[in-house]
Amino acid sequence: MLIILGLFACADVEEDEHDHDHDHEVITRVELELTPSEGGDAIVAVFSDPDNAGEGTSETLTLPSTGSFDLSVLLFNELEEPMEELTGDIEEAGSEHQIFFTGDVDSEASETQDALIEIRYSDSDSNGLPLGLENSLSVLAAGTGELTLSLRHLPPVGDVAQKEAALADTVASEGLVAIPGETDISVTFPLDIQ
Image (cartoon, rainbow, N blue to C red; front, side, top):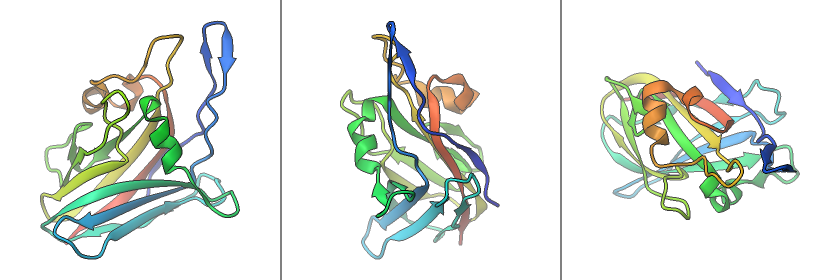
């Protein structure tokens, strides 16, 4: 069953005594593209809320019971005509963003005991901190569960950066509410490991 944890545009952040807009487009579509490490056709699962009404749907991510994959996260705004891809914008502003993977997953941001899959960051921002647009995914066990992807916007406050190395550890132990910033989008994909 789909659970949408949040779908928010980035908010304005007060810096020094001036307001600076962090203007990101609305994200209405998230695509997970998994390319088998040993070659073969990519597996794609899509979340879409084309009207940005908060009632989007997620396709089930169906995977074989063994294997490893390169996992790419692609982000879009379907309100634009034609549909606008935002992945490059997030990558360019990577020092202010990070994706966190939680649910029935073993990741830097999740301490799940009976994880079905393992996800590790493969990319980093200009400061060498994890971003999460490119990742590695390994299947651990058969079963059904959920994978939640949350994109967090972490702009600096004044001259102080909010994005730091230990954020994923904090999410794993205390949840997203324990870290700074705001959630741009958070969606849950059903998992079916066969």
